[in-house]
Image (cartoon, rainbow, N blue to C red):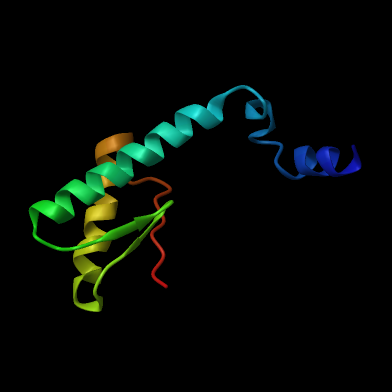
Length: 88
């Protein structure tokens, strides 16, 4: 109970969205972005492996993959606001 209250307190701006089913909508958006990315990379002839919300490609294709991921975010959500793509 203490842990749950701490999580709510730390995330006040989004706490009203907890336990309301929003997770399903977010998962759908994520899957649409992944599919967009995979299809566009396939169209470019660039092999990509998708693991959950991450992608693996050859080093030489990283910039193309990154741009495609930004394009996917904008295509699905309508803008790139709050879009973060991390390279590892």
